[in-house]
Image (cartoon, rainbow, N blue to C red; front, side, top):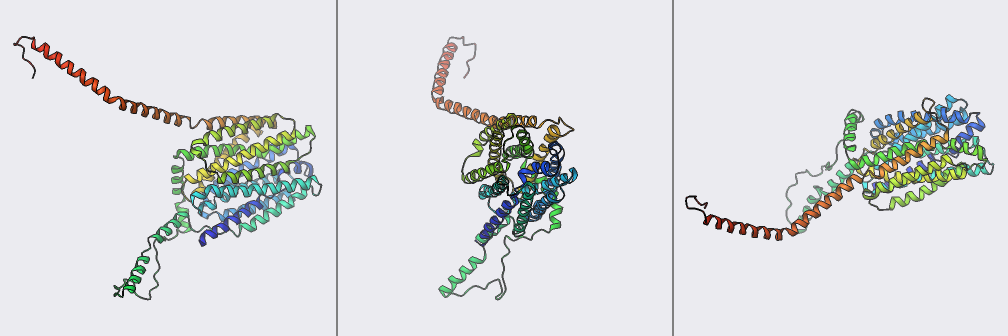
Length: 508
């Protein structure tokens, strides 16, 4: 009971970390801040500064795959808080050239990846699998609520001219400091779930309890007790279920073998592969869309001259995601049966939203489509993550989450190189979103149809079983007709043999 209360408190601290980490009111206005206050151009931000985030994603994820499970999550979360503070410190005091802006994006990428790997997997090492979906929804909802408060704060302060884009950065820095403060109070993960289960089983099979029971019965009956094999006065401590914790050096030596076993186990499981493919491909698209959407809005606003509500848009999709995420966390649905269809249709709708964003000249229509895209992804990814977490081995969640996130970042890198980079097609911002829309539609159609072969095979097996059962039902009648025909044939043979000459021997 004490341990349960401890980890409930840990969830509350983790929620506070997620909420404050996402409190960055100046985040939705980074491009506006760079163009209006730091003399960057929109082209520089889209094609030179923002792509630097991609490389930091991949490099940091490779490192996180190696160390997160071994370091038990908390040090990685604390490091993410430090990176977040450095991000906003550079934004305030050193955001004056393309190179320093790129360094800022590198630290931003490091803070994002630590969140995706360590923050979302910290609690999986301390709870039962049956609670994974609920805890996933709580941690995601905390992040989204932080985005809501952040977006509304920034939008209101800008709309009422209480602060400018530059001054909002100080609030973002304060949020990063608060997140680091709470991260320091997270309890360390000292024991995994399987060790806890071993202790529970040991409690159930405690050899000390029967001994005490026998002693009490002997005292009650006034009988002489048999001599105990344990000397009196000896401090007897049960060691069943308690194994010596491996040293940190030993864990590092065994890490490559664990990685290999985890990869073989995970990516030979059809269900894990299915959810991981959608997660990685969809998350790669999500990063791309979210990273460059301010450039698209700036392009539309330049021609429409409409008021900018970037902060309100981020706040809107965040609060909707909070509500839907909490609902999903408590909803029981057979995702094995309906998952592919629901995810396929939803991803196609995301593609349609991206097409509309690319073609519209109304900033508010683009805002609405972005809210639709973001909300659908945030709800679906809760389901995908919980399905993966329930299927993988315990205490390997960070490794698998990191692998999927790394795959997503590689997809993001390929999209950046092909669509955005000067070394690729270097497409205008509207054409980029047409490409993203095509990507989403193809992903939705492919994922929606991925279960069709298995369902058709199942129906074929069902049909063959029905045919076999029908034949079995008809078999008595068929057997009777065959017996009658055999008797007629025997009579005919006897008639023919009787009319033959006796020189031909008869068969007996």
